[in-house]
Image (cartoon, rainbow, N blue to C red):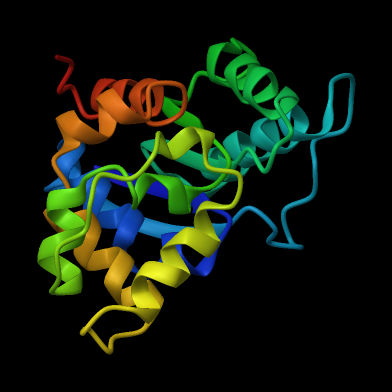
Length: 195
């Protein structure tokens, strides 16, 4: 199965999102990555708010590229309307291509804070359970602080990829119920792994 994966940041693009997708059923999939901000892919013209139109445009782009499905993930960045817009695109019947669309509440970085066991294993020191990840105002800053105080000298993107390898998806789902849980459900559905 060929899948186009579209996301925002360098941390998602460098292994972390791929590792999460593999845990959710994409083990055998051929994943191709692109950025939401790719200037060659313009927002869909017509009615609807920005991220709804952008998601529809990515569906059209995925069809043009001949892939079997689209996975699209954006950050909420404090703009709650993004959740509604992406949900509308997920449910839209304008395109038939299978898709899994989601919004990481606050930011993708919050997902990296959900499982203290994974953080402890990767960072090489005991990390206490973090506050509810989706309620942290600046999860990227919290991650940077944890990384700065760790024994691990890898780049942040590499550490995120390792955390995503180690994370317990059930813990992530229970701690990030607004963003990760529905996204994970859509991903499992795309790969025929519904739970």
